[in-house]
Length: 288
Length: 131
Image (cartoon, rainbow over all chains, first blue to last red; front, side, top):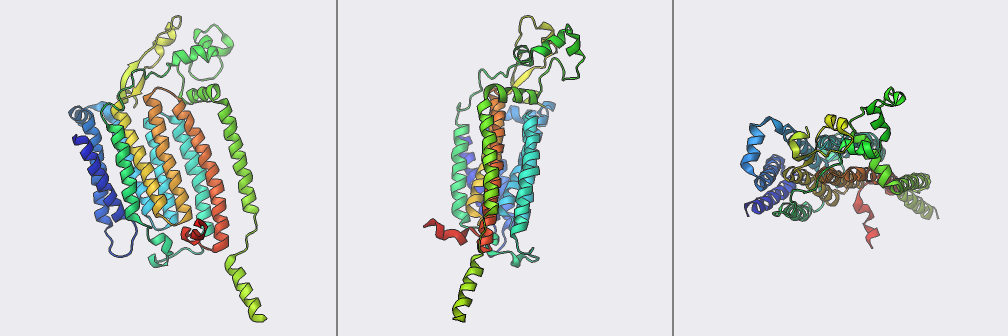
């Protein structure tokens, strides 16, 4: 089982690399950690390639033109993983949030490779545009003054908590996950993997469009809607969402409303500063 | 871009729609090998988020790491959606985004509340709550 051994080796290497990359007091071993991390990632990818037909894979990889998508996959997932490592190892919260935007952009690129265009752009807009802006606001709000020197960063940001055990546990989980994914025939090629073709969807759901294709309905034929013979990713998702999950989308709306009300209630709560309260109490005692 | 990820190309003909079929592009499912690549990336992102959640002591970064775990799950969901030829995997991402947005709003509100009380973002400052 060379694949399994290689996967476990890559996981162990990755764990060691991450421990070295974590912020810690004492000597800075980050270059070594970065080198080890890249090696581990390469080993992991090699193990995946070994699982398939390595020779064929490499042929496609280097010679064949049709493997452009795989090239995009490697670029985007390398960026995503490297940025993710930076998120959890950077000692300044603002930079962690900025690196997380990089993770979001890279995984949106991965979704584009998977031809999930709508989800890719929804991720960029909602994560990069809305959620991360909220995070940045709170980080700015909750930092007293921007530290200018490395030593001014508070200790809870400068040092990681139990990096060794956390990395050991995390990468053990990763090794188990990957060995389940890659155990022989666990994920065999799906025999009936066939997305409904465009023509099927048009025939069953978008009857108007079939008419338009026929040209029999002049009013529809002149309408400036999408192409009569193809169904885009957005249309597929919209149809699936409202055909199969109408209740779920209502519940999602309710959850958002509840979160909105909850956030307003939390924001309006008056909180006494504990330090000031204790100081005021001490002053009162002294006065007595 | 999709054409090279395909294990098989499928073309389903329907009687009476011949002219539509002639213009229909072939749809492809993800090969098992390509699926395992994407699952690996998703798993690595998830595990990195998990490790970050455990090791970082800044409350805001801890919540950022949970968002990173969501990213890993999203990639796995979309890869499985293409592998099984089923759009529901992609649709589910919308609900993941909903939960992420709700969580961000509530969690960050709570963080600001905690910060106003103790003037620190250190999770260890609240260790008394563990009982």
